[in-house]
Image 1 (cartoon, rainbow, N blue to C red):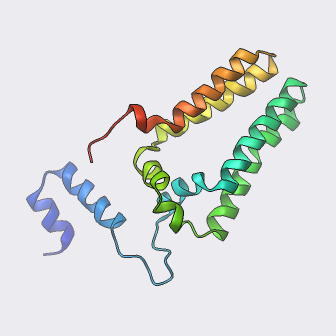
Image 2 (tube, rainbow, N blue to C red):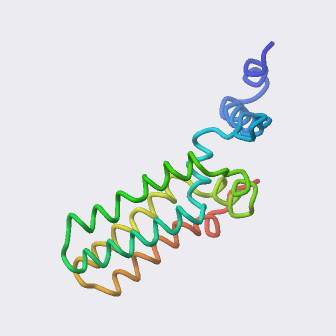
Length: 159
């Protein structure tokens, strides 16, 4: 009897899926140390200093451009650097030390798609407020972004 059928026959369906996912995440690392799957890397790369610097600097530069009503340039500066930094970090950087850090464990556990959507919403609020010259709205946008990052402090899940 293989692992999958044994899990399905002895546990409820939802638990079996969770155990299969956990077994996949707990699989031994490959000899080159790159046993992570793509989903894990897409979360971990977000905490690399180069990625964080790219995201924050491009967001503030885009806000400044939008404040000046340079719509296309502001959107380009706000949107294009992030995927470029993502590709570079995911391909060129060893993310293992970040994965094993406290921040890496936090991101793997709490950076849900909803938390990421909250961060994106905060960026949109930040940029819209810059366009309409609303400094308080820009502060609210930054607060929403930070709320997305600190999602795990408010939403605790059992271990």
